Length: 331
Image (tube, rainbow, N blue to C red; front, side, top):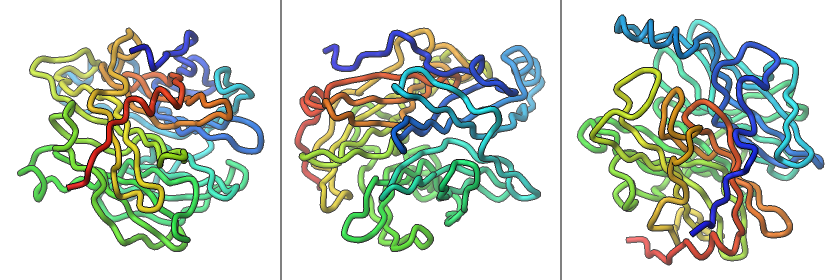
């Protein structure tokens, strides 16, 4: 339908643009702040495609170090990367932080991120005033990730989407994970958790789903992207071999007053891997939106990681995105 337009300059950010050690640059959070576009991107470094294949052939899992870098832009297309990473956590318990999601709430940048630890995967919330120092406000218990903050309080409370990973109680040990919502009075204590969208309700997914970019507010509701996984019966291109997950982007519309209610959803993927930079890379056939910006003229910028290797940009008209969203009733 030509609703989604991939930018002609894609990828808009890759490892070659980073002035320090970088191998894979992807899954960025993007927002507008103080008149400029700000991107916080995931940077995996320390391994190349060749070294990954050599180590993986031995049956060992290669170690990839990870940090979060910053880039800024005047137009949202051409990016200038900062001279050094801005966010990294590592100690005896914490292995790495990654997959940043950036939201501006009441003028305050809020960062959601994932954290690998020796005792499970945790989701975190931090704030910053200058993108140099970050205050950690909240860390979840394992296993919760893909947190995405709404850009304003709803009913006086902060609200986030998230994706718990209940392996044993959901799907009999399979990856049948869903999208949930939680609330907080202060960004520190989270509760009132409730289901937003079950994986079984997404016709183009046969595995897990999860939040993607932070939602944007429209007159019709909260417009939100999500990721959906479709398992393949044959191997897809990857550095590691044995990769059989295709990541697709979905689109849903949430109620303005109660965003746990899905009032519309696209029955087909918003985006599916098509180009070389989406189908070939560290993990091919992956599209993962991490940032979405609604411009004053009705254009929607969607920033997404491609093949877990590079960061890309697609655009669409808000009116066209509305045309994809079919009304849906919550069972």
